[in-house]
Length: 265
Image (cartoon, rainbow, N blue to C red; front, side):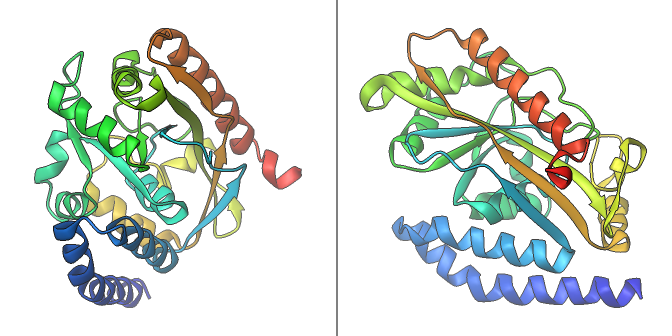
């Protein structure tokens, strides 16, 4: 019964949050490395209770500083990526004030930026560079919004300005940008198809609560996460060329996953 599953998910996430919250608050207060690990635990449990089954293909780049450039289909992308690695997300400033999600984003110490500006402010870029130089893996959704899960929207090269400036501020004047494709492929073990992808994807036209209830009703959802080869990016490199290469790779990996490539290989 849907109401029973909804209650189960709510209770489990509430209990887990109450248990982990004091440790996370201490980690934030004293800047302990623990603050990076606790969100990963929370995200893994959230994926489990929501029935999100994550399949990882390829390897996370080991070299640092590292930025992940990822296609964006849903708020679930954060749960999925957060369950795989200790990452920090770049989010638009408005997210800070969202109910529940904004609070969780602040607890994870997300980096909030003014995306409508062509260039991030100096303070925002400096924070990104500082976090990357400190070994944190920064996640960027370069589309700037969510899609229907079937395609990659036009990528804004201006959003890679942070990588360019960060490369100028970190030792070696070099950062690594790794393309990552997230593809929601199956529901209850059956292929979704492009017209049913909306079950998992969250385009802007759908309000959050009905979408969340739809996820709970749908049951188990499979998601393929593909890590491509990272691109070394120097502070003097061309940002538009980086954007083109990243976009092409993400589109190719997404198309492969949506065609069932990983199921057939």
